[in-house]
Image 1 (cartoon, helix red, strand yellow):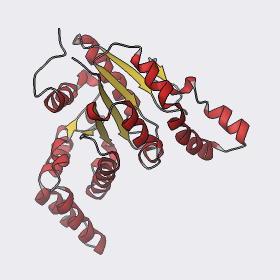
Image 2 (cartoon, helix red, strand yellow):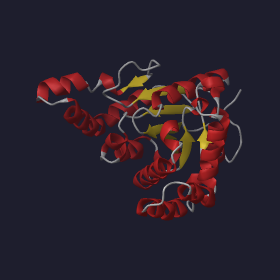
Image 3 (spheres, rainbow, N blue to C red):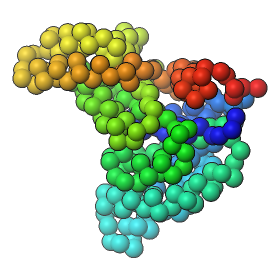
Length: 257
C-alpha cells in the first residue's frame, strides 16, 4: 500500500464515535491490519482508547477556558477553530507512523467539526484523496421516521460540506431488535416504506413535508450504504472495511497478511 487511508468518524453527540473508533481499531488488529487512532476532540474525557495522536497534546479545553475567560460552550468553539492552527503538527505526528489506516475520532458536537472551517481544512490538509467519512446515525433517534429523516439531512449536509466519500452507519445496532434494525435499513433504501411510516402517524403538515424530504433523500446513493454496526461481536465492521476497500483498492484486499 502506498498511502494511508483516513477514516473520519462523524456524528451527533452520544452517537458512539469514540466507541466505534476503538472497535474498528481492535478489529483491525485482530485481522492483522495496521491502524492508528487519532483523537481530534480537544474536549474529550474518558476515551475508551489511548490515542496514538492526540489533539489534546496541543490544545487544552481547560486552558482555553481559563486564559480567555470562556464557558464550556465558548471554549469548545474556540478549540474547534484552533484545530486548524495545529494541523501541521498533527500531520507530522501521523507521518511518524507507518500504517494502513488512520482512524480519526472527531469532536462530540458534530457542528464543531463539520460546519466550522477547521474540519474541512484538516481533511484537505491531511490526505483528501484517501479519506472517507463514516457518519453515525444514532440508534435511538433512527427508530422514529421524522428523526431518521433529520439524521439523513445532517448526513447529506456533512457530505456536501466535506466533499469526500461517505458511508452511513446505524450505530449501537445491538441495542435494537432485529425487527427495528431491519425497519431502519428498509427506510434507507425504500422511499415508499419510509413514506408509509409517516402515513401511519397522525397526519399533519409536518408529516407531508417529511414525506417529500424522504423521497428526495432516498434518491441519493449515500442512503443505500446504511450499515448496522455495534461493538458486540464487531457487528458491521467487516462491511465497513469492504466498502473502504471497494472505494480505494478496487475491491482487492491488500491490507491483510
